[in-house]
Length: 77
Image 1 (cartoon, rainbow, N blue to C red):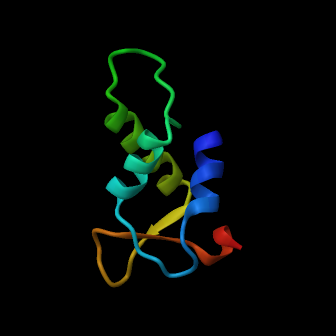
Image 2 (cartoon, one colour):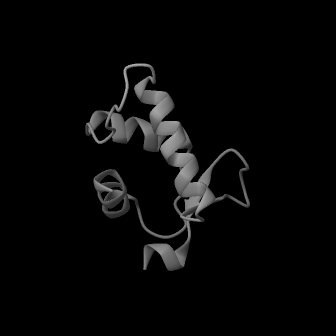
Image 3 (cartoon, rainbow, N blue to C red):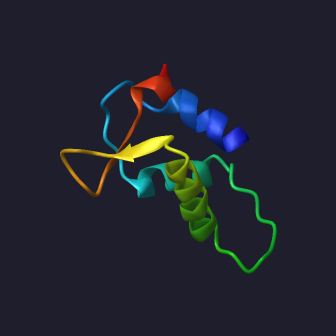
């Protein structure tokens, strides 16, 4: 949950579009991803973590660019 908290506070304000890679790299640089096994690479773990947050509607696809995401206003507030 630490990764989620840090990412939440450091995301730009409403309407900012970002791609998954930006967030995953942020988590990697900040050493927020915890390896449970050596089998999973850090970027794979980051992508899976992002997918979990996306599936829980923490992020949504941008209406302008389908390869980018935004944080829902209600989530950010």
